[in-house]
Amino acid sequence: MKALIFSNTGDPHEVLQLGELPDPKPGKGEVLVRMVLSPINPSDLHMIRGRYGYQPELPASPGAEGVGVVERLGEGVETLAPGNRVMFLRTWNLWRELVICRAEDLFPIPLTLSDETAAIAYTNPVTAWALTRSSHSLQEGDWLLQTAAASSVGKLVLQLAQVHKFRTINVVRRREQEEIVRSLGGDEVVCTADEDLRSRMTELTDGHGVTHAIDCVAGELGAEVTRGLAPGGTLLVYGALSTHRQTDPAKFTMPIFSPKLIYTTAKVQGWWIVRWTAAQPTSVLRACVGEILSLLGSGTLTVPEVHVFPVSEYRAALRVADGEAGDKKILVRF
View (tube, rainbow, N blue to C red):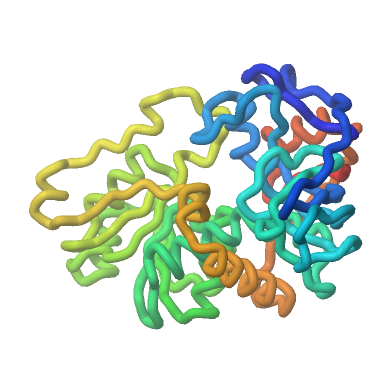
């Protein structure tokens, strides 16, 4: 089988190679899946560069999201059948033509969803769902502040807010992003290019501070959100600048005034989808994914447009994903 492999960490354009590996065979409780599509996510590029929170034993393949077709069942697997389209949960090494996976970590894809939509229905949608519905447990009428509100996850949060009736304060860095946020139902928008975030947080919360916040920027912006937390408020930090090319450690540092945390008992907590999914009972994760696929199938939830490259053109796919993709998701077809 063909596989995209890296034996050393470094620049993805230099260390990732298209090679051949023996075809794997499923063991007890496992399934052999023929890959169809997998996206190039920033986390994949982080991993190849050696900067991700999980680093596999090398040589390895990137990829933790995608869609495939069941090829063969291992002993004892009765929940799936050859020919089933499936998406992957809690699985690595997906940039290969054939993948071995535990049956419990595969989820059947409804006929209402295209391969392209299903291929990107896990990482960002589950992140948005888990941050708002699980870790923050937002209820109808609750307020959530989010940075990078026009990002892929930010847009999904806005759509989930319409479903579950929580309200949002949305931080963007360019005024033209306000229209995007408003079109998705964002309640309040703060543009840091021409507004002071701290004063706007004070104004919007009548001086009480923000109780629920999520941040994927870190740095000074994350620190500013921390300063605006209400007593007992919580900020979940799930990203840092959203760029896999950033190398300046200062950009990741959040200068936080400790007395503020002490006297308000506010909390700043790191959040990572890998740890969240690992901590969930399989039933909880499958319920989450089931809701996401239902919302995608009905059109209530939407994902970005995609640009698909055949695996033979993986270098071109990397180049676009590493800087030219814009709002599109880059997919590799195996």
